[in-house]
Image (spheres, rainbow, N blue to C red):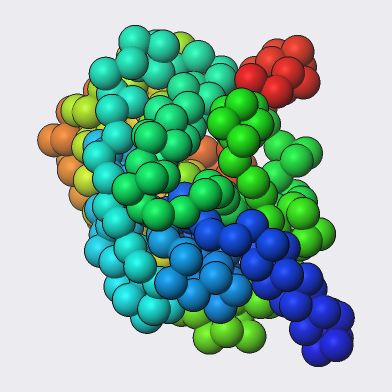
Length: 281
């Protein structure tokens, strides 16, 4: 994209956010929400606040990064505790699990709007998210949550370029969905399981020197490891393979497997029937 095109998209995004008046940004420290937080700070100044949800499904280090990023951006920041793990519908882990999580978050933010002193809740959804399995978008529609990146016509690639332009350190950060997304649909979500997944991913990230990996939890406490294809030989090295099996079994997985297809985002969605992917919630 040319500098002129990127500047035009930046200005459009700032105009969209400025038109809201005052905003609360659902801020996860991912690339999308970080760009929205930066844009909100530029467009709304002290009429913007970033809100980060803390729960067992948040991976280690993500909250600290959110706090650091908000400080760097200069936006007011609030951390709130969400209670999706008290919701039986969420714990059952159906195909629309994210709907229940986002409903909890957006309902909490709606109740906090007077205290936060803002009028509008915004999220980090971009144009590319419209073609994916995103049950949380239904919750956003029901709670009148705005998606400024979509309204400004920004794709994921645009967002990364804008993050790079603004020198945000997360411009090349891999996607980091919540830990519950690693659990196969129909396998119940529990704090113990997400803690185990987090510990397993932290172990592998340190061993392989990458955050672009997943430890999926399948039925029967089976761990399915996804890493980039070029790292498969390293993971299959006898010494590391043995350490990995020992560590994951110590954590409570009963069986450890490696996915030869390699890392890909949303691989569990491939197991859903087509009709599950076509409904908004």
